[in-house]
Amino acid sequence: MATGRIRQKIRTRQALLHAAWQLLSQGKQPTVAEVAEEALVSRATAYRYFPDRERLLIEAVLEQRLAASASIPREESGQTSSDRVARVQERLFEQVVRNETLFRLSLRASLNEWMANKDKSRFILRGDQRLAMVETALESERTKIGPEDFEMLTHALTTMIGLESFIVLRDVCQLRQKRALEIMNWAVRKLVDTVLGQNKPD
Image (cartoon, rainbow, N blue to C red; front, side):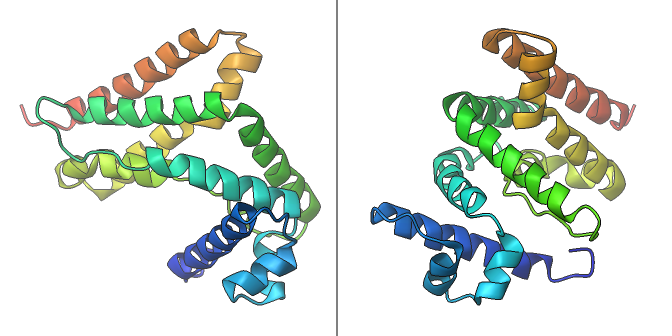
């Protein structure tokens, strides 16, 4: 992934997920090879992206269920940047709660894939829209804080929302869903306000 062609790889991955969903919608339980044929992608390429059929089908379903949450308004009257990021966090939290089993199965599949390839220096590409959604929510701040701070802020926020932080608060901290949502929301707002506040001119 670090050598370039990132967008092309993402497009190929999306084509496989779309093809898998089309076949699932027809009542089929396709193999990776059948999905590859539907997506007009070679079998070898498809297996590089999804060596595990379970992961492919789980992510195809999640991709469709997350589609409705992917649209985050860039600007709304009276909204601050922290409001928009908090909305991203809230939407993703809602999706995790509604699809918790699928999310956990997807995470398990990606971890199993990492274990199977940990000695091969193989990059595991997970399907996730968090980073793009956070970047959209903060787009108006990009030129105000500079590229390095923007990248650090968006990457830090991406670690604070979604499944992994949900698991920590639920499984490790033993919190109820409502309290977990409150803490995640508080955390992203504090980080955004702190970073942007430090970069505002006096």
